[in-house]
Image (cartoon, rainbow, N blue to C red; front, top):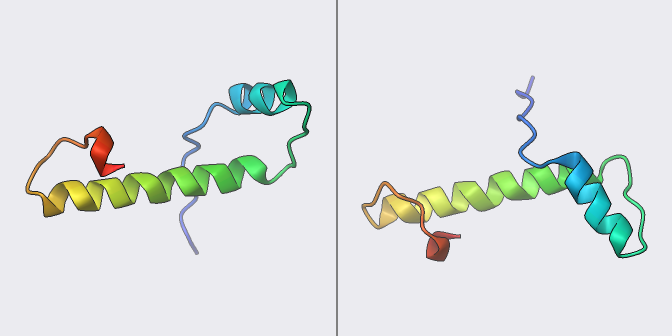
Length: 61
């Protein structure tokens, strides 16, 4: 069974932003956004390691 990932996004802030654009948030949208953030971070970490650094920089993302 896959380990559940900790939520990295602030749900209320995401929902408020979407609502400010006159849209609604589906019940599974936050989980999908969280998955994308994990993927973005994992890619950035891999790039950082490939460049023999230990600090993730904006260009890594």
